[in-house]
Length: 74
Image 1 (cartoon, rainbow, N blue to C red):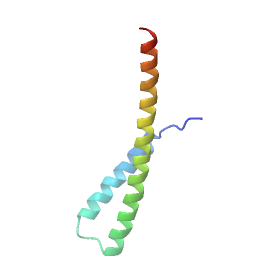
Image 2 (cartoon, rainbow, N blue to C red):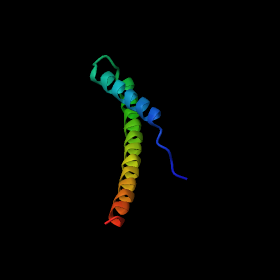
Image 3 (cartoon, rainbow, N blue to C red):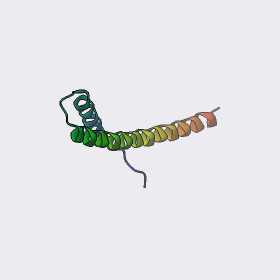
Image 4 (cartoon, rainbow, N blue to C red):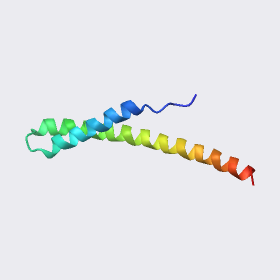
């Protein structure tokens, strides 16, 4: 069974990444907080990258199917 990409979860993760980035840009965090946020950001960025890679593979797969269908018509 093909895995469905959860667009809502991806959007939430991306928004959290933006929030973490803003928080890390501020100098109001102590070192422990900054490290914790940085770790969370790394995990979220890896998760988002995986989702984007899966989406890219799906698009390429669909494109290949369209190309094969188009080639059969010529």
